[in-house]
Length: 117
Image 1: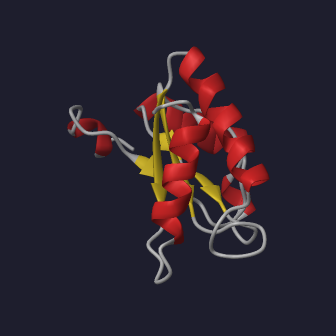
Image 2: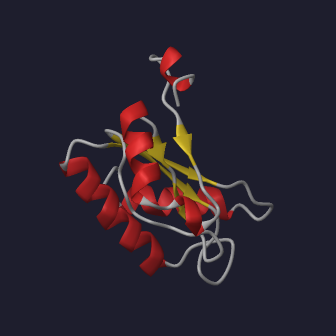
């Protein structure tokens, strides 16, 4: 973490793929370095909705039943994002690339759910 602090102009996020990393001791290290805990959205990647920085990075891997997301899944994340924004948290959302264009479709749907258009 000390090395990351030598780049104060950069924002860093870490995505952990095993639950053993999702513990208070790791969260404290991330907070002390100003590093965001990545919030991965996938049925196969562990998720703990925990903010460790004044910003967050949401990585939309895949929905519950497919690469794309249902309206219910996107609505749940839209509510969380709105809550983060009211707390003054900057939110970055990344939809994985996919060969069928679900990422673009779902990003547009989330944008509408957030009332951005």
